[in-house]
Length: 464
Image 1 (cartoon, rainbow, N blue to C red):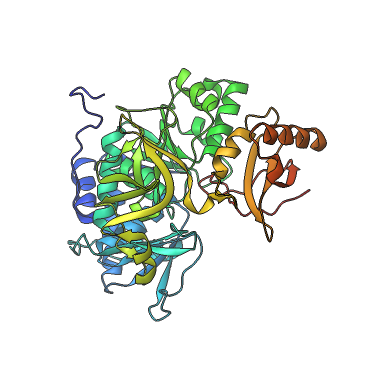
Image 2: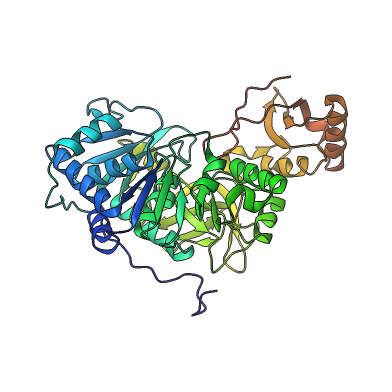
């Protein structure tokens, strides 16, 4: 707990992106904002370039701009100048050309276009002070219905979520943060861009996507946000070569996006003094809902609800309400009405809150397998048991519906002999009275397909 016995620390809130940039100018002018390759960019230069790009974007009003930039530095300049000019930033891995109605164009912004604006524009003396509660960002998401859609978010939603995250996890001005998760993911934008900048820290980006592990040593990285697969990979390298050899001994914190790493990985990092912070979130909540922080942390949980929202369980489903909630799905009121009920977002995730207030997520409501006799199984629960079988690296359970029966298709990743592994799986299914429900067992050495945040895609292309 904190010195005052609370689970959160005091952090100055931020009302708008304009206030955000002005704070960086006044408080951190001489600090290094970005280390891009070998170039150090101070906050003064960063903010001046934002003002130059604001001059460019202020020629237009309420336009949508898709940011097609991979560089951490230029993406940050683009995002903040688009929003501070009163326009709308569109975040997506794939280009978006119009709004869902097909009537409103979305303009693409590239790094070359941004550099041209920086070279030719004069810094704007003023920002456009738009209402922080209206649409400022559209973020691509699979949504709670697993159908790709745009999530409409205000400045208020993003900044209050940043503030909540910083209240739970201390972001240090002296730290160097490694850019790994692309900023078109809200987790990367809020936790690995906005929060480090608001703390006056430095963000490091080599510009080489395959150099993640070597970047820890080259840049003396203190903290970063990583998907679980990279957390595990980093731990494997540390086990093999040593903490000092891989990281230089500077690494202190990792915020893990998506599913938590295996307990052995978590415990290993804690033993050498590197703290792993896990949580739970979704794009519709900008994105953090709960977090394990510096002052309150429970292994196996998704942490305490963030101070920007409330969480309750409705018939086993996690519901969220707070200032970080989306305005709705972009130009999709019918889809919005399906998930927001009386101001509460029905997440589609199942879970519970324990006696200490920590949130636990048990699975997706849409994944729940209901057999014809009424018996219910969460596939995630069965996958956990499969991964306890020696030799199983990963597992995936999906349902197969015959005309009169619900059966199970099981896919496991293992380097062991297929017949022996299939026998072990059948033995385990017999122990839990599910062998009669087996349809197929597939054993493969190929890793399961995952999203950019390390979440397993439940629709897999299997290979025998």
